[in-house]
Image 1 (cartoon, rainbow, N blue to C red):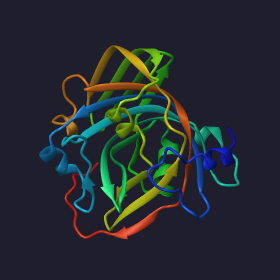
Image 2 (tube, rainbow, N blue to C red; image 1 turned 120 degrees about the vertical axis):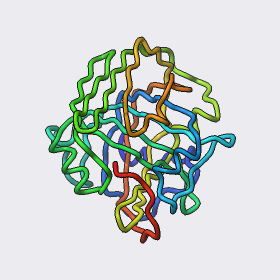
Image 3 (cartoon, rainbow, N blue to C red; image 1 turned 60 degrees about the vertical axis):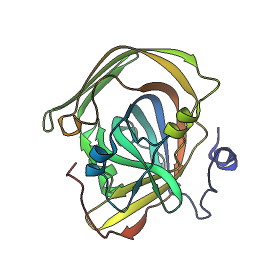
Image 4 (cartoon, rainbow, N blue to C red; image 1 turned 30 degrees about the vertical axis):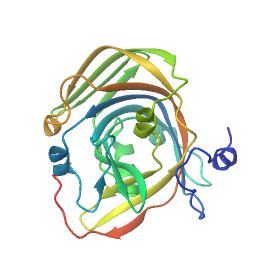
Length: 248
């Protein structure tokens, strides 16, 4: 589907797409979603006070999303696969800001060192390099600096044709928020609605010592998606007033 067609399909969005010109194109493909319901008091330690933690039926959630980033490029330039294509793992939570519901990243790992440096330099998102390997039914990562490990073995099930409100709440997010030392950055994004499938976990080994009070036991919900084509706009900066989050 062409970019113009994607931009013209907006009926699923909670607010209108930006009027200014978009800046980046990218694809988030073959995504594995692992979701945990967590305690608000613990989650607050990782989220800047300028952002309001979003709740579903009174409870906050975090998600580990393991996927493959592909064809990322600026508008009017081609993608360059040695940099633009790489495996990525992000740990995110759900927030509200400026009357928009979005995601906030606790951590982002990329499987190529140079790609992480380029992405972090351009976006100020907290990219860091991890060794990542994926096959058709396995996704594996290792980060010696943080002692982070992830090993998912899985099979993909049937497509979910009737999504629950929680399914939509966890996936349909059209803004990203991230903090730097001095500002909160907001990124508007747009894509078609996620098509999601059931997924059967054959094995899950996940260790993130910094988030051990958030990521524990089995996930409360799991999903798989073939992916989405994403259009993104440039960052909007808002000056920060306080800082309470641990280093990523």
